[in-house]
Image (tube, rainbow, N blue to C red; front, top):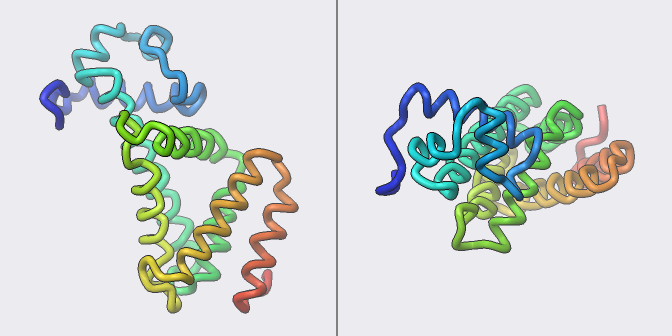
Length: 190
């Protein structure tokens, strides 16, 4: 916790959840405190008091988004047969293509890009951490040692297909690309 950030409180947690829902609907790239505060039934002053600064609020929102993303990806991996890399990739892709997850994924892309272009701001380290998170989920299964090339290749295919899907909306083509990769590693579609 920074020197300006306040300790957790029930009101802070409540506003963080409401702000997270707002960010899912409106994005984080151009977050402005006045519209956010109005949408969550608060004021910019209260948000600044509870979070310390706009940057700290963004960091809290990124942490909240990361927690959601990791929980969802862990559940997808477990549902897909947790000890098989191909099954984990297929299950993760199944989760990624679900239209219900688009807002979270768009928020993820915004944060990832800002982390790369503003490495010293509130986005600092987000891109690197999310790569490590995803490698941690894919690594160590079916020969894909943590950070190993099998897990990295699976991650690269998933991320590339995800960006393609978000840009074009072409689920069929992006899914075909993921399935082609899986067939190359010996896991044909079921």
